Image 1 (cartoon, rainbow, N blue to C red):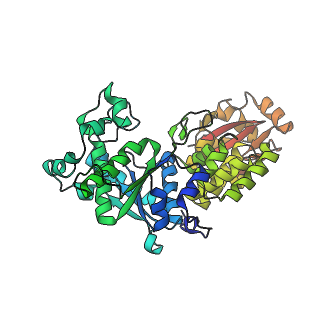
Image 2: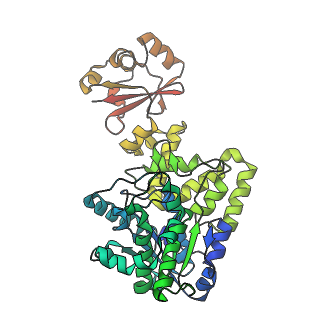
Image 3: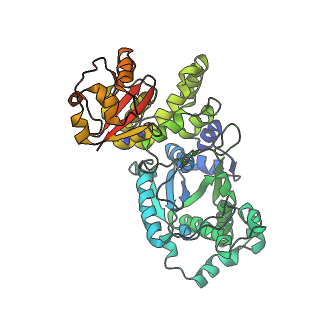
Length: 446
């Protein structure tokens, strides 16, 4: 993705908390958080466990936290959980996670690093973003040292009061997942001591883990004095849900990933363009960098002509371009034109094979060999006998369809029933798209 998309000039909001409030992105914040952020440029972080080789749009909501944080003049840190990913966060989970191998975790870590580098500015002076990996400070720490450094400062009562633990008590929780909050708490302590980080952020389901970190810092820095004040702070953003209260971020195929190999740019674009009118106001505020005036303008124009889907188009363009780049966005739009019958041969030729197959998934398909295609005497034979009468049952039926202007090849109407097959362009060197009125049929040439 083009770096300039995320580094473009815009009016910077110097009050991070106010920015989050009008966007509906502030759930909870510890007392004193806003005062700390107004007082000085502050280091803040969000953790991402490498449980998959890609982040998804649920993660994108918290990445936007880091982006706004940086635009407000603060220094963002993205923590890759190379160590915590070996354990698994119990937050929001009803059952124990399966362990991933170290090899898979390492591969996931590297993939996520590359994705994060496309969203945050790592070369903008004092508040340049940084990526850290908690495996770097946990790899040499033994179990006894961890108990002395962390375990002695937090009670079982305190840890058991966290929702991530309480919600699992009845179904069972292992000591490993019970201890996860200690690992995350020590992450915060380490970054506080070695990087000067004073804020941890995350989704609202992370509040318990995050405040474990602030409590650990308070107790370790004040010799376990429970009356001492806090020097580190916490902030969370609401989990994004649909207007009907259901979870946001899933498609029929599952998670919507940022990796184009896991969710293609076309599928990604379709996810956003198909959002409801009721959901768009919140999504525009959470997932774009549009200002309040820009969003209000989009909403006003949309209200005047909802059938034009102005809000959906603005949302889909902004997010798809930021995640996949301008070129992939343009291809996704072209692919959508194919879907809704507005495409030309040039549009079809511009699509890659994966996108072409996604668009026409479920469309009837016939396979014909290159030899049999070459033997076809004319278009009528191709449309009937050569394709096993799967497109038209006879030459006569095909002829009547052509005469009725109901046949197209690769989105171009045909009127010459004697057309030579050598004149037909093969899409992706192997497909012919036959239009039967408003229906499509794919012929694959092998």
